[in-house]
Amino acid sequence: MCPPWHFEVTYRINPWMDPGQRTVDRDRAKAQWTQLRAILAQSSEIVEIDPLPGLPDMVFTANAGLVLGGQVVLSRFRHVERRGEEAPFRAFFRSRGATIEALPDEMFFEGAGDALFDRRLPILWAGSGLRSLLQGHEWLSLKLGCAVVSLELVDPRFYHLDTCFCPLADGSLLYYPAAFSPASQEAIETHVLPRERIAVTLEDALQFACNAVNQGTRITLHALSSPLRKALESRGFEVVETPLDEFLKAGGSAKCLTLRLDEALAPGSPGDRTGSRST
Image (cartoon, rainbow, N blue to C red):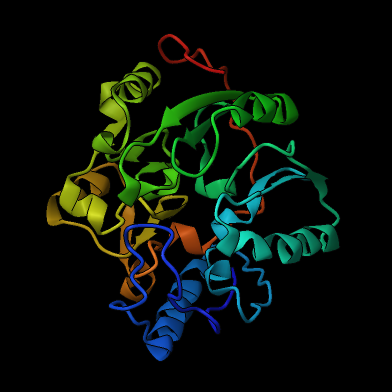
């Protein structure tokens, strides 16, 4: 995680950001981030990276890269406004002794914001269409040694995969179907059985209910509807709501504010469910 000491909305690179209208209350943002950190620290060790002035979105550490074991695929940002984050994130991973996998020059890839590991099968779900490029998915598969399922994002409000898609610890999936192209909706349905799919409403999607942090049986997020809470609790999850509306002003929430450093491939075979549509 990265403290939000320099967090603000000073440019517009997604539909949520409006520098003229959505001024960040810095004190409120600090309090919200601190509360989220305290909740997550109950179940996980928190490692912090120092924030730097002039990099207001550095707080969204999900976009630093994608970690698997001792490997890190470092992000290359599509928007110039965020490219200054690449060097400090690279230095952070090097300080931890990680093997850094550098992307081909022509590739854009925005880390764990656009790449999420399935929790039951050794599959990497990878988003494309708005920030990360589809062409990089085959490269990711070769570097990480796992099947990659490509999902095309089509709604600019859900510009990263983790804003509308959340694989859960029990193997189920929390997602907003309309954020994906018809072909990608079909790919999701091919890989995930109906009883394992939890489709959220637009109301919940706009509250970033899918941008959740799942630690075992606990799910931490900004807000959700009563029906969605009941659906998750019926599966044995404890749902914790914590206000993060200051970060929604920049198009981010709980998951965006974190990067998991202990990722490992799930057991099983990519074909254990129904047919496989993997890169």
